[in-house]
Image 1 (cartoon, one colour):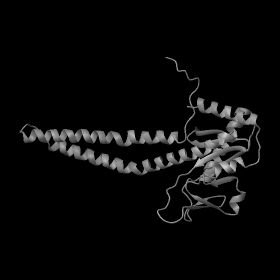
Image 2 (cartoon, one colour):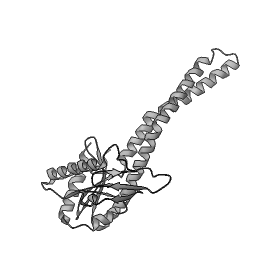
Image 3 (cartoon, rainbow, N blue to C red):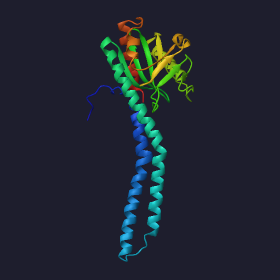
Image 4 (cartoon, helix red, strand yellow):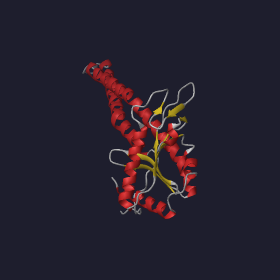
Length: 253
């Protein structure tokens, strides 16, 4: 049977995180719970045989079942933090993707979850005002107090502390990669902007941040920032870039 589709469909927002989450559940958690349940049932069956004076003794199976339950519980507790982080990141990417989809009404081309080599770009917007590489960072909000981040053009500070992995450097690298990819495939170099968005957070920029080449925003503000910027790309080049990027996405493994 031959598929009626001429090309693979493009990815949805957060699709890579969805896959990683499923892999984590199926590979790291589920097998141990299945094994634990099986051994518990076996142990109960052995106890039944023991009460009815059917040899052998259930003590060995009980010990093994108890060990399996403890291992399954340990694996679950160990994976719980990672599962929570993956769900948070996935939901954040989906929420940002929904904001960006509105830009299609203005002629923008929007892509999600673009695979690279050992990394992925969360979102790319190709618009007449430029090409935007958007990195989503979904942070848990505090139970009390204001959810505020400070951006100084070099780092993003949460409660005066910088993150372990600098998102500004990360998105700059992603922007450079996309710029070179499109330059190689189209023969043209297009103006590209790096953006980091934090769903649900208020961003307080310093004076230095306003002259930075990287935007750090709440995603609700991003469509307006894009649509109100200066026009730099023709409609023909918007279509050209979108064509080459979609062809790359569909051909990459």
